Length: 307
Image 1 (tube, rainbow, N blue to C red):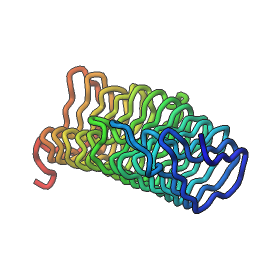
Image 2 (cartoon, rainbow, N blue to C red):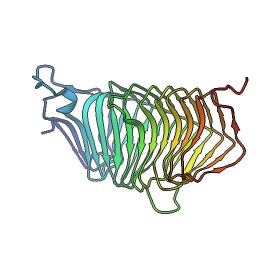
Image 3 (cartoon, one colour):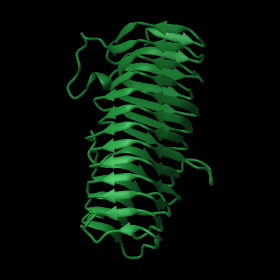
């Protein structure tokens, strides 16, 4: 049950605190384009939480359905947010220990939000849009099943809440053949098990990101093409690992890792204009890999470019 239902409404809902019982919901939007501002949607403080669960597992602060286009700004919540076939905008919110599951078709904008205590942003079934200028601690962004997103200028801080899990994960054939796929651009990603993973038949561009002290910074497991360009990678076990496909790997700097760039047996990447220095092994090419190696600065293993 939801104490607030907005049906085909463009109402403005402002400066409310809604206490949600465990197992209940806060605000349901069906159609329309309401503005939801300066709200607090929080668990009922008197509710008894069962062992093994948290308030975030047991409440739904918002649910958006039926082609709605709500704008949620300057608000705070915890719990499981669901959006189905809608186009929400989230701006300037504080979101704690939340799951944000958004199924398309639809277009989402996530801008200048702060995520605390681990949050999963998961988009699939033909979602498009932007995730830009957010601050996320111990969370993850998953893009799959026909979705194509721009993930840009975010700050993402580890550690991972799920062991081995990537912080930005793009999977499944994202879109039609020849289209650009998702763009992961200009983000700062620090202290995760895996920074960015491109998997299955996903198409993506990974450009201008700063990745520091992740166990694996960039992992390309897609059999499709794409681009890994102008990223700065420092520390960790492996800077860039390519196990499949033929992405172009150009203009990256990888330093201070166990392995700088690792190319797997089924991979066919093109490496051009990269600087690979001061890792224990700067470039590893495994048997039967078929890379195209252009002009790169590759230092002797374990040697810095300045030495």
